Length: 575
Image 1 (tube, rainbow, N blue to C red):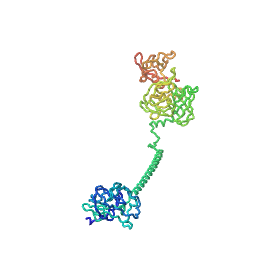
Image 2 (spheres, rainbow, N blue to C red; image 1 turned 90 degrees about the vertical axis):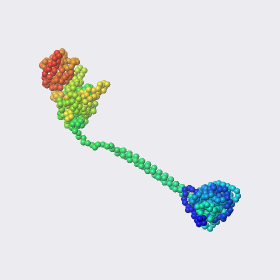
Image 3 (cartoon, one colour; image 1 turned 30 degrees about the horizontal axis):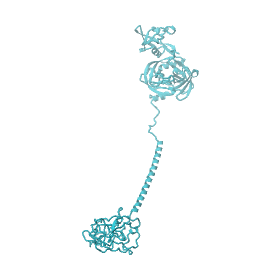
Image 4 (cartoon, rainbow, N blue to C red; image 1 turned 60 degrees about the horizontal axis):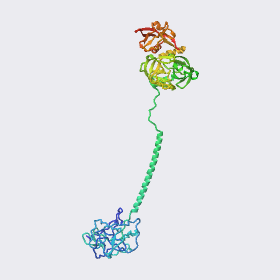
């Protein structure tokens, strides 16, 4: 087989930073003359006189004989291929591609064949034939690493030297003999032979690629950062612009018209007929000054309000819901009913309010109150009728005069100071009462006004209508009377007729309604038309709720016995 097969050079192949010399294809070297083979201890190869020989792996290759492999004589060296040269440091002999190298037979063996050979970094190289000496490894010059072209005329052949290549399981073969099996032997290493370092180191190209890659990455990062910054700025700008145009969901505009029976519908109908009164009292702001409310009765400019609003007034200014103001004059007033009428002149387009019937009012009916509480004009509140026929007294001086007795409608619609004289409207927008009094919380300071606690009282419109008509006609109102003086100190149930009247006069008017009906001093009246009364104030309220000339039925106790009498109410002028 050794004679039939010829060693084929291994084509160069690129490797990762492995020894560059190891990748170089082997090239034929001049055959070395065989010499005597001297067995030596396994060790590294001796260096040539003018070059370095790679040592064999321990135990695999024996150093050459007395004559080491010598490099070719100096001659012109072809220029090196462009690019950096391989590594200066070299590794030990590597195994052949076909398998591990068998240990050499006794004698000197030089590396050859298919396995790549490299120089050792350093290490002892025994000299052939003359003791041991140490040769330090030197980096091969780059120019020397370039292989000279095969067959160059100026390249001298390598000096012959005895080198033997062991074959696996056979005799040693000369290093220059190419007839031996390629996979079984090694060729002598000649660093100057063609193709010894034919594979250039690609480190510079790799470094250039890395540099270009770094530049590309840096450029990409820069572009990404720039794009991100521009995108963020555009996002902030868009957000700011969108926030300036922010529109929250909202229902579409609806018609301003409301059902006539709704609070809004009632208010829209009634507000043009409601006015605010500003009063300046006599004596430069003395008594009677303040703010109140009123409503238009007719097209002649008559306005109904409370007596206590205009009492002692010198000047009265009326302000309509449109904001227009004009002066007004007092037509008539009555403290017993707490009602008054004022008039404006020269005003067109007045909107009188429709009057209802207070006798048909029932507890729980919805109501709307309009006024100027605390001088807040055109204020609308709503509630219900809480009670009917609630006897109240309001106003009055310390001597007991000017006390108002009202058989009132009670409502929980908020009424406050300034609402006095304003209308209390039913569900059809008709006036059923004149707001007159409230029951407020206890005052904690002399300068503080009490507010609504849900107890408001209104004069029934039926009574207000009658009094207003009398005030417009005559300027004075008449009161229905029974013709007796009551004992207001009586603490029992009912109203007791006094023993005598004011100034020692008789308690009953001679020829008056009570005297004609047989009522006597000391009788206790307990019912009026079947309605229970608990005191003198309530009896007065019930009587004044009628008109003069109305029939009246009284239930009374006399000497422990209950009696019933009938009478016709008389008339007395009010103050």
